[in-house]
Length: 602
Image 1 (cartoon, one colour):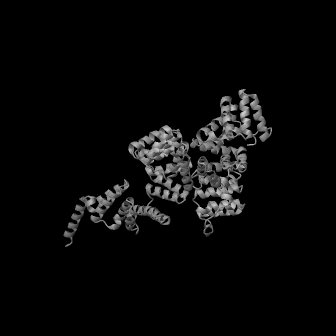
Image 2: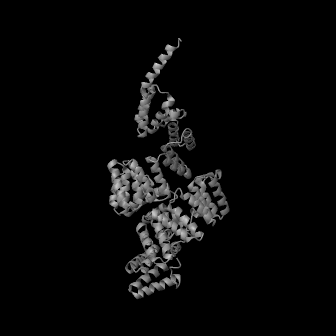
Image 3: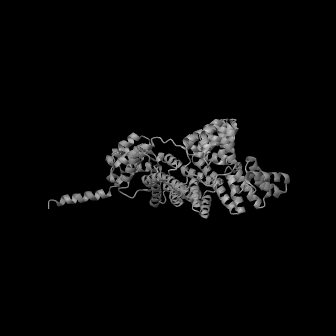
């Protein structure tokens, strides 16, 4: 009986508590909500202030640690961030946020194993937010776990179908795997959610430009400038557009407006080098292309650009030193052979130049070659014996094994790499190369196809086509190339390949369209063999004037090839022009390549 008054008092107290707002019931709750909102908009300073208010209001450390640590991380103070995040002591309500921030901290400090462990901890008490899965995906991609990255991107969109960052990540992966046009709808979905996001607009604009939609690109870039007038990417993208249109002075002015933001990035170095080369500043072009070649030692296109600039700057001896061994390979391109041959000529060594120029005159190499050798056919492998399965030594070691004819050992090593790096598309491509060179086209194609789920770029598509051709399936190879060109309509190299297919099949109109596209998009204006093939297609479609123009240009570039001479002779005959000159060219073609003409010899 004596307890009843106490019960009535307790019941009254509970009723009063029920009427008190939640913030009053949980001191610091409002401040924590403010910290959360500040972090979501990327404002580390405001988040730190609010988190301190939550602490002052009485919230325990483990309730505030995730917010305070993430705030310090945003502000770039990694030491203070670790003071809050390093122990991993987070309230259950903030568990995912805390370990997510800890994973980001470990990435920033270069600790991939610790970052992976932190991401795993973040997923222990829930399915994970879209933002968490995006960061997991980007992390997995950065450490070569490409297939896991794709799985994470799919999960991010599943969890957050309206999350702009998830849609952006999906767009980026779709661009790599399916192509430019396939990526555009993903960018557009993301921009529906955050139409004023300059980063998203930049990715969308770049994709539009590479897909050939210049007007849409320019419209998008102008929108970027409206939103963020000082955004350097907006000016860089406009510079690229101007350079493609041949407006080099405008491109230079736009690059100046980037305030050097792209001067140390490969894309910016390439553009600056091209602009210097076009304006006759060969020495400055050499400096740019040399930097690019050092940054990207496996980028052979950069090496060729450097060689061309060196030759223009009287650097013939360096051209020979850098490119001579590559030109000695049996799969060297006519362009490379000509470059090295002209370098020897510039040095006054005509006897040394002749073999290279003769091989260049013989025409295009046939087929596709992978894993090119290094200097003198040998590779210096730095400390590879300490761990021969390290990813960074995989390429040189495989090159060396294949160069020495040790195909079985190369295959065994590739299998070990696949076992060690099962989610790496790069390793799949390497293993596919080994299989292709070992004449196992079916295995090569399976490996290439798996890698293509991650990154279906031109080199991989050409490898896949080579595997199809090696297995006798030219039709599927052609379909593969056509599918790639449909998604990447500005790829002149693939257009040229498809033009060759059409030419061989006697599809003259299609060949003319594709080869004309290749000339327009790439460096076809300087490729005598492409020009000769285009002239041939033009002849077959009744475009005699165009055929003679292109055939003359081809002959001016390459007078020592019988096929080029034969095509010009045919064009002159069709035009009813100088019969004597036409007969002389036919005689020259027969002398070089036999009475059947040189076209078949190519």
